[in-house]
Length: 409
Image (tube, rainbow, N blue to C red; front, side):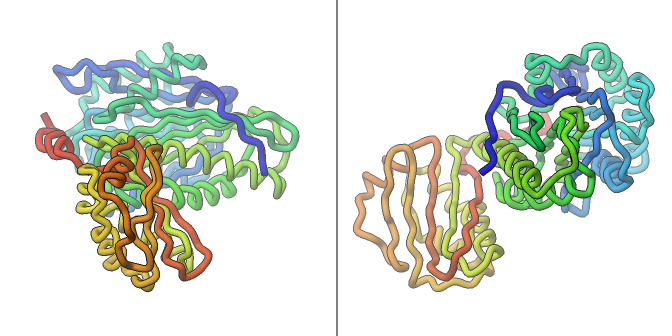
């Protein structure tokens, strides 16, 4: 098993990466940092996965084209406040103009700069503020952990806290690092969500391998989380590999190590998004084992974690297991309800609530105590095979409605 160490920092942990986050004043009356930039000293191979929503924001269209072109990139510019989605040709032009301005200041071509936006759909970017922000960010870029933290803070919207992570591992005898940051709290659903995620590594990885690996790992992590069942217009996950660690060609052993590191990174960030769901009080994890195939395992786990009734029961600390079986039943996956076991597990204890499809002899008070923890796991065994999958979500609270009832204001 490859050795992967957690280290301090975020996006600036790998060699050659710098970042910063500041307030450009995109939305009047606010005080939050609202723009960030990531820079790599050596141009990086880039892989990306994006929203599967047919309605795609301008930055998603721009980045998709850059990733598809195979060009190496040198920077990413991110804004919050407005999503630059459903803004027509003008929005497409604004995305390109943002990239072009950053490129001119950094000595790059426009197509070597990626852009990302998050916020209210339908509103045009205030390009005067965006341009001021880009001009202020370039000279402020630093490779320090503090700069990484400011960048992670600057991409937040309704998030309650920044989300970043860093790892260290070896490829071909060379020490490599990977750092990442993401944002996401609402409009989160499998097929990505209103989430932005940026990963940097100093490992040298061919673009084709990087893309294949990201697509595969994203399906096991970001596409297994849900907050509210809404798939956004702006979802973007980008991985930049600048090769500054100096490792040689990727061997089979290296590939396993790199995949493990990427999985660890994306899983950690996925769970941070799920637990920080709008209004959430706890992380809700669902693991389905004993499925006949991988697709069935994923489908069943996602169906439970996205069930509004189940999420509400988790919030109410109510062991309403009938809602779990119900969600499994309409998932479309095949299983025998009469063989299902369900266990609730948390730092407060572990309790079997269903055996072979019927209620076990359990204490409601004990169940309530277990469900009172900050993280609750439903372990579901369908006894049909050898496949397992895990999905992550959160409880559904009154605050979720309050946050989204006045989101635009």
